[in-house]
Image 1 (tube, rainbow, N blue to C red):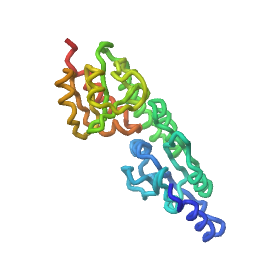
Image 2 (cartoon, rainbow, N blue to C red):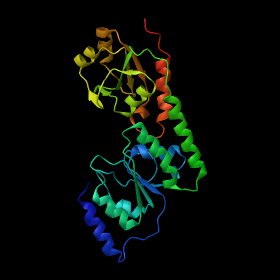
Image 3 (cartoon, rainbow, N blue to C red):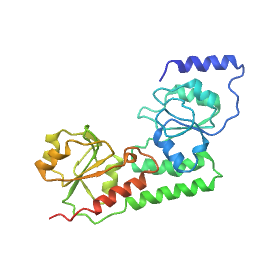
Length: 266
């Protein structure tokens, strides 16, 4: 977080006498995943602040790691939405929120349960009286439920889910995509843990029946893996799968359709 946070806050408090105007409006989101969900709920116009990586038109107020306290104070949100790290929310943000009289709503978004909780709670955090927003949240949750329903799958046929690109970042059972596989009763080739970076020899030793690359980046390693193991390679060209937002259900349905469309194992 910028060291300017405390200095700017004190400067504004001094310049304004009693402090920042108590009038507030809308929400500031310090998480691209939460911003994406707010937009999907039809509440994008309520955003008065965002991170540089959020797909929204609101002014940039920084992020949890690089908060622009001056911009956040000028935006005057009633609500601040965050995806906190394991160590919790920085005290600088809490001080700014206190000065604004704004409430902080936080969701870790590490698991499918976290994402569902965020979708359920966001409408009330934004506007408890907005029934259309609440109805849209129900639609997003229903899409996740459809995607995660059990499917017919040979348990001996293992699936390795990997982020597309050169990094070979695999999704273990403790990740939200790993939980998706488990909910669908599909065997994860990675037996334990969360995200794991695998080299070629490790992937060969795992010998997955199917490799699903998620995202739009080219994955030049898939050809070699297929030649050496005979594994089936499937790409789901959807970068939304890499963001734990409320729109995940539709993207997970694409993964499910890709798996269901595979030829039966010989």
